[in-house]
Image 1: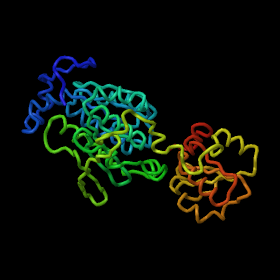
Image 2: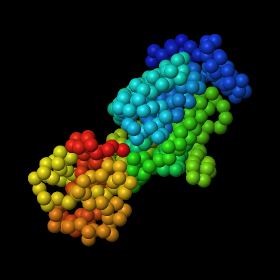
Image 3: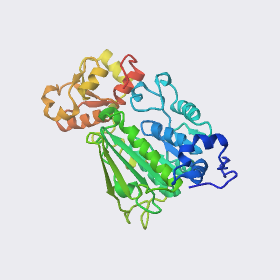
Length: 393
């Protein structure tokens, strides 16, 4: 995982000799038999790319920087929101509204001035993923959606890079090290993505704030073990964390010889359209005329009376950001409560980001409702484009 002394072909300094200040800073590492001076030199000469500077990327970046990883790359395109602060420990109240990467760079350089930060303020896409990843030794996946997760996996396999995977949901997390050269990759574990909308996002399903701290720290640990060459990395193993019971279970994983990207006869030799692969935009009932834009809906509400607004979010979401005059039926209860809705009126379904409302549209259409549309982008888009007084969460 180390680089030659001098300069790499990326122009980065790769001299791994430690200054006196660094010897003092890392003294607790240097006395560890499995790290020592050579291990710390390897850390300084290494480069790690973090895809995502959110819940998982925050603790991972902090501990990799503190450990002395010489070059840390960050890929993110978002700004800091107040709803990030209960779990994304890179940021504080004063950072709300600012670019995550700008704040992260300041924090990490303050934590350790001996490292180099490379920021890529963009959404990772198939157009540039290979170009970004190829210059780093290890990739830490801190993403929160399936298209990017499969993109990171495939790009790592095609580039021959280890992928330190992490995932969180409510009270549970997963950690693994995928390396298609010597073991299974993410596709070996999950050949197909779940149906669109089946797995709620953090905004929809929630997450215990401390959980990403645990999982992201474990991802940093696995990256450090790979760099230093100590211990037993989670290669071919999946660690499952249950914070409600405080149980850690490790499962063995096997490489799938038929895997389309890391198998014996791979069919994926270049990056693909991951949004299409994961079925995004293909929710049942979606299609021409399935959605209404926020501004169009605002005009409808000003000029038309025969429109029923149906909010299918959960009760706690209604309390955070109520949509005035909307009927409220959680998506899970909708099939049994169709009779409460007037089928003679046009119905516009509403949720947080527009995914559940498309599912609600499909349920209504299957129940005989003829005129149903979903609010594109959900209450989030309504707040941004029409009514900024509605809270974003």
